[in-house]
Image (cartoon, rainbow, N blue to C red; front, top):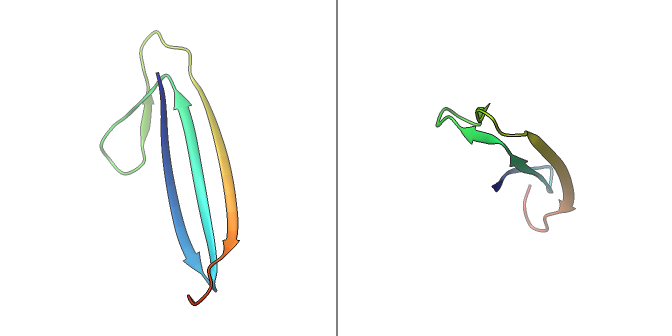
Length: 57
């Protein structure tokens, strides 16, 4: 099962996003903490994106 989560923030007019795709992990319900699922092969991929946010500072 593949799950995806992302976070973003804007600073100085630039929006920075982080996307995480993961398998073999379960969200613990405590912040962004993941724990491995028993007997599952684990893998994850993180990507970061930056773009200008016009009109925001």
